Image (cartoon, rainbow, N blue to C red):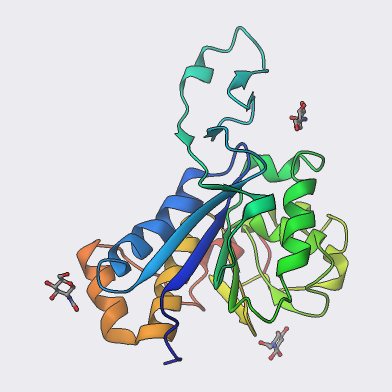
Amino acid sequence: MYAILCPLRIAVLLFPAFTALDVFGPLGVLNVLALNHSMTLSLLSTNMNPISIDRNIIDGVYEGNPDRESHYFTQYVLPTHTLDDAPEADVIIVPGGGGTRNISATQPHVDWLKTQVNDPALSYMMTVCTGASLLARTGEIAGRNATTNKAAFNWVKSVEYADEVNWIPKARWVVDGHVWTSSGVSAGTDMTLGWVEHMYGKEEKERIRIGMEWNALEQEDDPFAEIMGLV
Ligand SMILES: *[C@@H]1O[C@H](CO)[C@@H](O)[C@H](O)[C@H]1NC(C)=O
Ligand SMILES: *[C@@H]1O[C@H](CO)[C@@H](O)[C@H](O)[C@H]1NC(C)=O
Ligand SMILES: *[C@@H]1O[C@H](CO)[C@@H](O)[C@H](O)[C@H]1NC(C)=O
């Protein structure tokens, strides 16, 4: 168990077409944790517009194929701060999703992350799924171990500076110093529960896990590496 920061300041980085569960799985855990711990949350974006999980909706305007009816199938999240006025955080969580593939749209996020990753004021840098590609693109995790979504593994390994990272093919999540990276989507929730255990102990993790009826995989349990032919 580590010294408990008070209040614990969490920031989640958002961009269009983030994967919903990458954000709301970890927040599902932290929402319960926050009932009994002093915590703050900021949701960061390039501007204050609602952010859609649909990659074709930019600043609230649908820019994709107008014949595609499923653009009504989306959800929006309201940011609390822009990257320019982001409050200091103890923990930064970066989700993945289709939006990470848009290199130009996510460049402001990468530029901001670059200023944060190795800032001594930051206690934990976490990514879920292909959020690891944004972290790799900062060039600030050279030589570190990391993992990402096994179905997108080779794409993530192809982004700028990703060749400097030691990508671990079989791991539900990887911890290297203050950098925590998880495998795909649901793995972010397992990693967050693992982080609760690291911070507050196993009993607290189990209290939350059982309350949310989450069938957690452990750090070394990664059936998806084999399914995707990575091991
Ligand atoms: C969490 O806080 C609530 C009230 O705020 C209290 O009833 C409950 O016992 C606390 N649980 C733990 C595990 O501390
Ligand atoms: C990338 O995002 C920009 C908005 O920042 C948008 O104009 C462009 O169409 C997107 N590209 C793709 C391939 O989705
Ligand atoms: C990084 O991964 C290698 C295996 O590829 C392992 O030997 C090493 O201990 C790991 N380093 C850390 C800091 O976990």
